[in-house]
Length: 261
Image 1: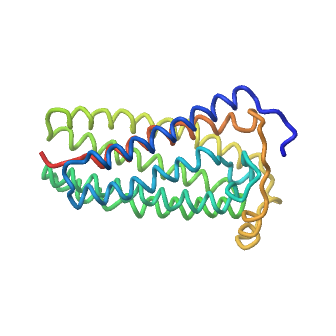
Image 2: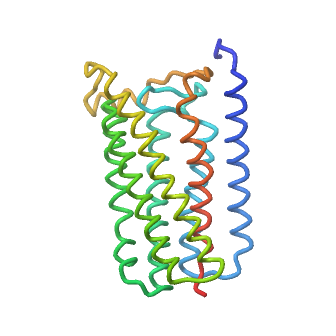
């Protein structure tokens, strides 16, 4: 049992992301049941989105801060290696979704450059996952700096692809793509301005003596965790997690619905 009382701000935040998780899972089920056109594209996107939505729901109820080995509940489900493995699988699924979506946009608009852009997402995210694992195992925040920079680049590529496709589409699809340009263009800027800077600051203040070898870090990530209900610990993590579990999930769900006109 945790001796410290739960903070009111933490309660509100946990309640909000918990409700988001339930809402998002319900939305995925509704989309799965109401899809009228069962194309290969839609079926694949639905499966990939299901993984992403499910893992985001899991992470909403069992949040953690990887390098600091901080978690909310003292259970094996909060183990750092478990959460990071689930997140890696989900983020690779999201990268596949992005690639399939931009490829579909290329087929719809007949813009060849989108076909090329569609091949970028999976390699980019694979590299991001590798440097993230390096950070988690070595306790070196520079890995997170690189990872978040790569995610910002992915958002810029996605926003550019949306804008390029919007110029060749009409109606509701065009307005949705324009919304995507704004969301992911702003998202890239916020990631650089806040997340990357946060990890740079942590990298600068963290003494190199705490860094681990990858093998030692793997053992440490399987065993060590520090459960806490202090809002001060979670305050800096709450904004990016909330956006990740809302806009990120809604993007994943929206990609399922793209159909040829």
